Image 1 (cartoon, helix red, strand yellow):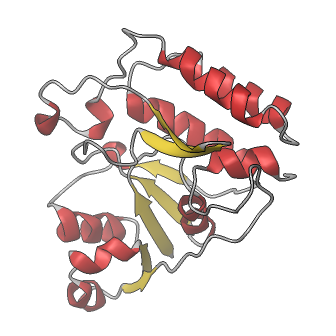
Image 2 (cartoon, one colour):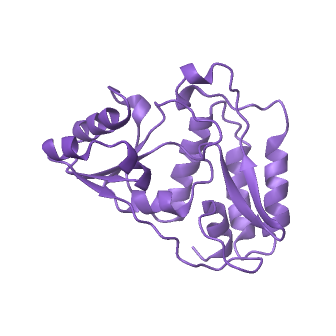
Length: 218
């Protein structure tokens, strides 16, 4: 049983889906603390003038005492309109514009109160578009013990994992020896974005999945 784990992400990059595709089961890690200026609530799209961040604004009061699953989206300004306008302006000439724009608009206009719920429902829809059919388990629905390496290990043990796919940053904090002692092989993802059809000149890798979906037949 191969398990991968990742925090929620709005408009995740291609490597996020590569990790899911190579797993038997994926744990959506919404039970850990929210990080400001991370890729949890933002990612980039490509424009004729370079890169543009699309950020879902959130209420950050007391965020250090809350899990990602408890972080509320801030609807005090109309960020949905600005996201959709930016997508329309920069991708109107892409081959999949109508389909993907409608998909994005539908998810945003549901106005989920919590960031993790928006990311979770968006992820399920994105997996369907990409023909990825793997179980997605929310960590907030599981027992959570420990922090960092211990937490990841406990989640893997609970799912009877024999292999864990980690992002490269896991090398900084995972106790690989302890995983091995529990019969779990740790594999570090080495994802390199393939070149794909893209608007506006020179190819730029590692953008949000939105850019790939807009520009390629799926």
